[in-house]
Amino acid sequence: MSADTEPLAAQFERQLLADIPLARAMQLRIDGWDGDCLSLAAPLAPHINDKGCAFGGSLASLMTLAGWGLIVLQLRARGLRCDVYVQDSAIRYLAPIWTDFVTRARLAEGESWDDFFAMLDQRGRGRLRTICRVASADGADAVTFEARFVAMTAKTAA
Amino acid sequence: MSADTEPLAAQFERQLLADIPLARAMQLRIDGWDGDCLSLAAPLAPHINDKGCAFGGSLASLMTLAGWGLIVLQLRARGLRCDVYVQDSAIRYLAPIWTDFVTRARLAEGESWDDFFAMLDQRGRGRLRTICRVASADGADAVTFEARFVAMTAKTAA
Image (cartoon, rainbow over all chains, first blue to last red; front, side, top):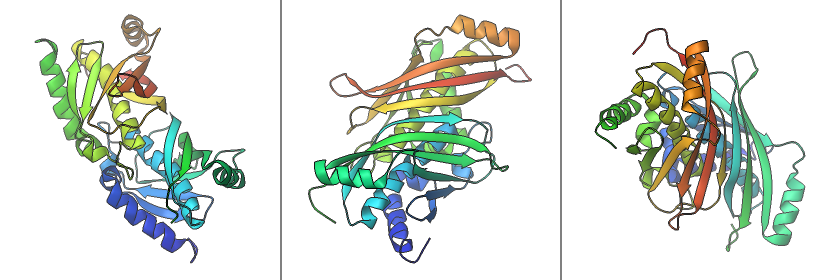
C-alpha cells in the first residue's frame, strides 16, 4: 500500500470488522490495496470445513467482501459516499485450499472506473463487475469469482 | 420433520456446528428436512451488513451449506458416507432481507436422486445441482442460488 492509500484501507478494515459480524468471524485483514486491486487475507482455521480444507461458503463470503470493498474504497478515495450492493455472483471451485489464503479483487475485463463514475455522476447509480481469485500454492487458480455490484449515491456527501 | 428423519437431521446439525466454525458464527439451525427439502434458519444479527440488512456473502455461505446439507443428509439416510464438495454456484440478490430468515434447498429441475445414486454406485462419484431460495415477507424470491456438487464414495462405509 502506498502512503496515500494506507490510511483509507486501514480505516476501511476497522469499519468492516466493526460493522459486519461475519467479517470478524472470518478474521479477515486487508493485505494490500493500490486502487486497482484489493487483497484480503484470512487464516484457514475459521474457514475450515468437515474435510479440513477451506469451506466453499466461507470463500464465497470473503470474495463477496473483496469485490464490494474494491468499489467502496475507490468511492472513498474520491470522497464519495454511496451504498454498494451485490446484485449477483458466480463462483467456481477448481482446487481445495489447505492453507491460509489471500483473495485478490479487480475489475472484470471491459469494465472501467471512468465509465462507472460518469454514470454515477449523471444518474446517481452505477454498476460494475468485479473478479476475484484465490491462487493455489503453484499459482494456478483455486477459486474464481465474478460479481456485479450497484452503487447508489447516498443523500449526504462524505 | 418426521420421526424417521428428525434424529438424522439433529445429528447433522450438531456435527455441522462442531465441524464448521462459520456455521457456528452464522448461528444456523435446521428448520426442517423431509428428504426432498432442507430448510436452514438463521437470525439476522450475525448476518448483518453496514446497511442493517443481511450481508450477501453471509447468504451465499448459508445457501452453500443448505445445498451441501441436502445431499449429505440423503446420503446418510441411505447409510452412505461420501465426501461432498461444491463445484460451482451462482446467486442472484433480488431484494434486501431485513429480518431473521430461512433458506430452502431442493434438487434443481431435471435432477434425480435415483440417477445420482445409480451413478455413485457404478462410478463411485455422482453430481447433482441444487437450488436454494430465501423468500421475502410477501413470499416472492429475495435471493436465489443454484449450485453443483460432487459426491465421492469414502473408503469406509458408515
